[in-house]
Amino acid sequence: MAYKGTLPSELWDRYDCEGGQERMSIDLLVAMDINDKITDATQKSKKKFDGKGAASRLKQRRQQRQLLNDNETVSLLQGLGLPLERSK
Image (cartoon, rainbow, N blue to C red; front, top):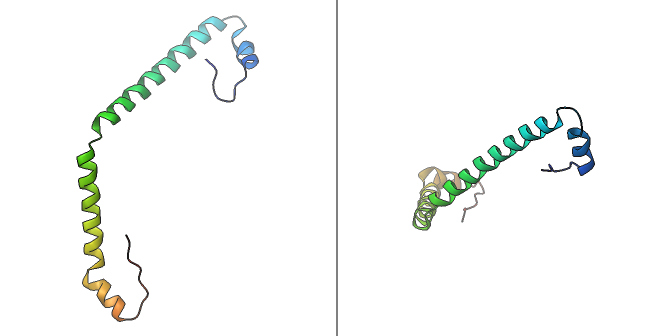
């Protein structure tokens, strides 16, 4: 298995020595373990996605922003002539 930025010749130099087979076995086992963890995390994150939930969270964030924009403090600052921009 080649890592990003590692040339095949560098891997050959690394593993073509006494104990190179063992070193390669350890590296491959670690790489497979990392790959398994990434795969598991990816699958779990895909299962948790819920379109209705995402839409609901988006709606809640919009309502919170609207409350902040309608807040008395904002009205007070606008009354003082400070320039404010509304978020969309």
